[in-house]
Length: 328
Figure 1 (cartoon, rainbow, N blue to C red):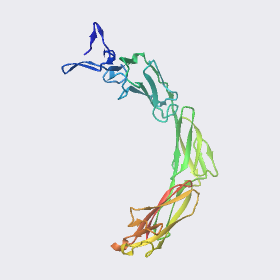
Figure 2 (cartoon, rainbow, N blue to C red):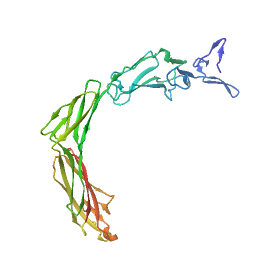
Figure 3 (tube, rainbow, N blue to C red):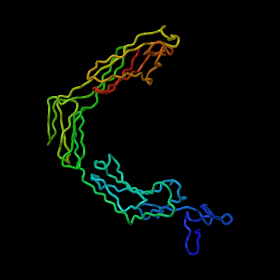
Figure 4 (cartoon, rainbow, N blue to C red):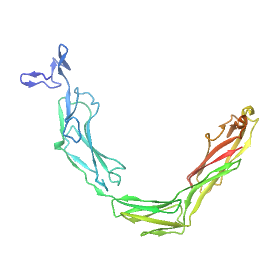
């Protein structure tokens, strides 16, 4: 309920007793004056209710945020190569625009989200922002894409998109894995597939030592098929060697056999090898005090063999992961 001095409404922040600002006025239990101001957003896209309002006492921090936002999607097959603009938002309101995907200028920038907000604190009097005064620009550009398909096993084709008349295609070898199962010293292998020569129908070709992957420029848009020859494996191998350690360290043979272990790998392709005990599929526990890299297995307690699973992986070289199920 507003309060008046004559015919003039006394607005928030302007009712005082002496030098003290009055925050609230009541008649019995009914408020006839509340010292608050209103921030209004009028006719903005999608707002409910309209206008959308926020109210609070002058000088208080605005919480929740007094803001409205709406999104504009690019037409199918297009994206925001240039940054959309918004104008006509007057101070103390501020505006911004953001993108999905990798940001404006990227071919996956397909949604522009506009925001208008009043930051900071509640003002001393009511303010509003009207969408009728706002102008937005949402320029989009056509996205041209290429795809490359390879019918051969273990070889993959890749494509990309651009705003121009060309885009990048690629051919790469898939992952190679050969897991193992057996006793101490059993190995597994991992890495990748490579190829010597490659050819794109209606596009470029190359060789004789292409390696694991190649990339090239293609006319866009377009769908291309490719083939390779001389497919081979670029792989490394690794294994664990186990030594019975019963009676050593804090191994208690009453609870099963203890083993120390050490990893060996061929080093093919370089990089770094990591080896890790993997509990699922094992009947051992990792680590025996005083034995360093070790396990204690409980198969004999249940009349079964001791089994331990180890996983090996490579980084910085041919890559890949493999495992061995050891029976000891």
